Image (cartoon, rainbow, N blue to C red):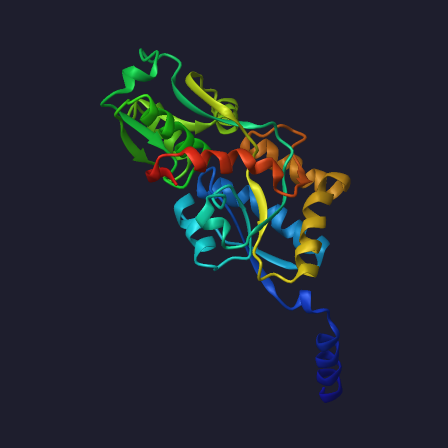
Length: 276
């Protein structure tokens, strides 16, 4: 027994350092908590297995909660577009990948049978948003309402599914949304919407890593995410996740050096102070 214990200790000591640490991964909540976990857990398990770097999923109840983990430095990897303001870029997080989905647009939408036909008709009404951190669904859309001087009552619903639920139930007159999630929800739930306004294009959320993660670990995780599309097991995980949340069947992760996110930075240069 003593010999076995010594052998086990020696084997543990011999493992590479990246296998000794568990890093936390926080993707912004785009769906309800159960759906988000069901989408991400198989991906996190795959990346952990293929990279040799242990990751665990850390989701908050809302997108605000999840982003708070990042800002408090409680996580080391993220899937987010909440870190491109000048102040947050000083934290040193780096983009290493993104999903290959088409560029997204902020959209202000109403139910297809709504009598509302233009933004001006939203004046004085409740408008749903996933949360104050949502760049595409809230910041771009609310900035447009401010620019057009349309005074609405923002209602924060926790995530995009929550905002759609409020719209479908008639509790809000419209929602600020992400075009990809509008299409996914409509496909998944059999709903139809009318688009009142559409923003310029922005790339999907970015895979990002904290500066405190050693380069070897960060590179291993990046290779695993980006390699999913080239591995039968990885493609199976991605396809199942895409079907679950309404993404295109071939949605996968590709490498990025962050240059695709310049439109986010331009937005902050001109955005109202309340949205920076």
